[in-house]
Picture 1 (cartoon, rainbow, N blue to C red):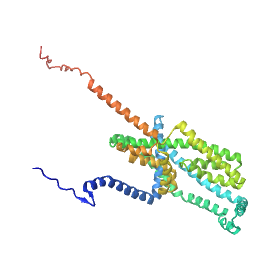
Picture 2: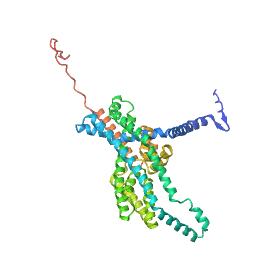
Picture 3: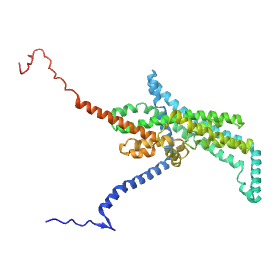
Picture 4: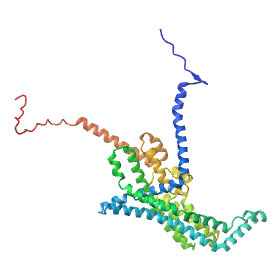
Length: 407
């Protein structure tokens, strides 16, 4: 006699099994989204403290190979660590001075062109009237376009940069301590033998970060030289300063050149009118496109591995979380998150494929194929290996030699 199965309970026409399957799929997603939102809120709340620490961390990663290289050249370990600290802090001090100098020079130079600015505003007002806009409406629309307001904006930025001296000292001190501690981190991690996947992911992060910074520095220098030379030929004031600003803003992916474009275009507009300003825009755009989009991939390929969309959006995401400093550190921080969340987990290849360049995905696929081939080859050698010969025990003094049982 067969037992009849009890009917499956239903809730609004949905079985409990279907509810459990849906919960198994959506609960981790909802939990992950909620955790991400909380983490972003926490990072944004502590941006004033966390931003300088992350900057010191990226600088430490950048100069980390220096003590090892100096040690192989015979430099004592203490001196090698000291030189790495000097290099990291020197980079930071140089960039900070360049930013302050650029803003200070712009605040000083702009008021000298107040007459040209007034003529430019009058010409724009006449153009609006000729297009059918009433004189009163045109005057009201351009009433806020005053050179004093523009100078005030840059003056506020200059004061903010000067007020960040305390944060700069904090970053310098943090970088020093991190460089000292980082000298022995690889040896300690290797000795622990724990989490080899995480160690590999962190090694990839450090290598990719250094590659990105080296490539960005090299091509940023070329862009700065070309831009400064073009500005000098066109007669734009302070060409060397704007070339230096172009070099610094090159560390901000995709939109950095637009930030470095504003001061020289503004001065070109005052010195030579709209024609010269348009020419400066064209030169900057062509140089950026040719060197960053055509020449760099040919010679060095992709130095980061993140997709173009991820690199572009990371600037806005990290800027919203950490402020302007987040825009500068967008790519290194994205690489760090990638290493922690995706790089160490072999089950998340699909996620790595979504956020990485196709070349990176193909390289990872070939690497897995090579490892699999070596593993199969090793298994085959083990199964076909000849038997080891029987070892005859050596004679021990004072003990009679053992004879074979057949003798």
